[in-house]
Length: 353
Image (cartoon, rainbow, N blue to C red; front, side, top):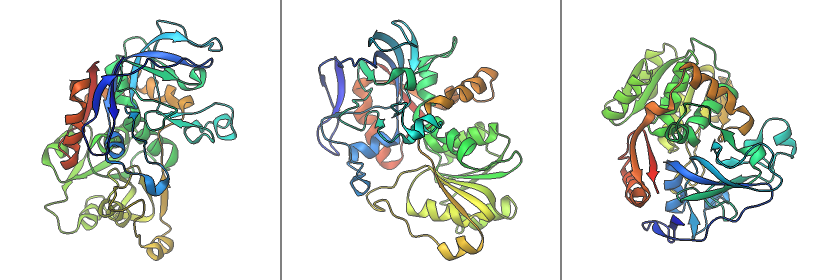
């Protein structure tokens, strides 16, 4: 089968012929119909993550936001059969550890990260294997396209889990979103759907305009404002109840914390680059005195995807609105390179393999 393979950090992915996935007793093989191109793929391509023992090995097939059709099933799989249409969360759990049993399979003790580990080749490929499919795979409802589910993918699900499950968000609260890439725009859309008032922050007017389309009540161009946290505190007024760092650089992380009101909550969605190497200095004394909460969020438990699917069915959220471009597998190297200078808007999806 054809796949886009990481052969050397920072060099274009190689589109080449590789062996078909091997089918486990508990797994399914999926014909990939759509797969989002995520900034996490860019981090992997750059070789980031060694500071957190999370560096993707060279030789890896990237891609972690797939949807498609089951073409073969292992003998122990009960929920799925050939021809079923499914989506695949990137955070793959076994389903039997303490965290999985308590509904937190996104942090499974023995979990795998699709597209980021040698034992879980990704979906920039014609076919992809899904282990422990009964636990991990998500059936696509009638009328939901693979492109829309790929748009839901890692970024939309991560934003939803962070705002709906990790943060204590109440309708009417103010939410600030720092960085309007794929996960940031997802956070804007989700926060609006959950009844929050939203301030979107970015350097690009095009991305801020997209944020307004997705529900932002206010926008701040960080390049035109000397004091971003101060502007947000005036707009909200008094500071955001929840603030999201959707980019992962030191400036956006600190701005996110600084724009909060007392007892506010900072939600970290963006991963850092090789400049921060996983660490950002924060005003811990002020955070302590103002009872600021710092929250992390990773993906979403597979068992909670039904919440999002019901919201999609009601029209409350629409991940398809974030999809701005459909591309071929051979375009992936160029689209990853475009992220070097934040040159993409919304979510781009591979639909031609």
